[in-house]
Image (cartoon, helix red, strand yellow):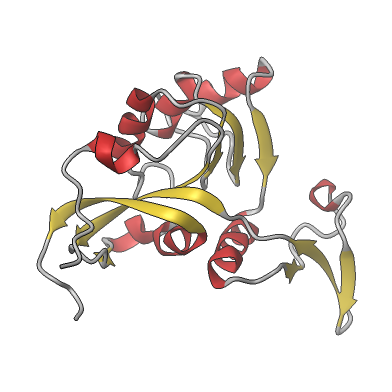
Amino acid sequence: MIDKNKSSLSEVLSQIKDGATILIGGFGTAGQPAELIDGLIELGVKDLTIVSNNAGNGDYGLAKLLKAGSVKKVICSFPRQSDSYVFDELYRAGKVELEVVPQGNLACRIQAAGMGLGAVFTPTGFGTLLAEGKETREIDGKDYVLEYPIKADFALIKAYKGDRWGNLVYRKSARNFGPIMAMAADVTNAQVFEGVELLYK
């Protein structure tokens, strides 16, 4: 019988090692798997590359992981907002690297990894600093930048309901990056609000 449920955070996260690349779902705090992030902090891993929509809020979730000194690099769309002071302090002190990726490109690159694509051409970022050093091409009279997929060792996501096969149901905007991140990681760990009987057979 297939049963992907785990009984403890340590069991769920035990495969994650120093230097891993991790996709973390969420749009701000909506859909952010805070309990999984807390478990990651307890694990004590270091030198992580984190891919997420933003770089943390307040002292919660992803910001807490940054504050713990676990993160080497952040790849995100929105590194700074009014309550992103943890990231801001670390970045200004040279303690964390940053790669800014426009939000649509971030989603597209993650999805490309999940679909097994080699790369994608996107018009977003053409002619800006974000395109420096990257291949460009004109296609049907429009300029594009070549972007490579973002694949990860692990994805940490949050869902509303989940069954023992790993089928997930998301709640409203908390869905955000969850489905495409699950596709783009070697191992996906999902935090669910409610465990249910098989959703799909």
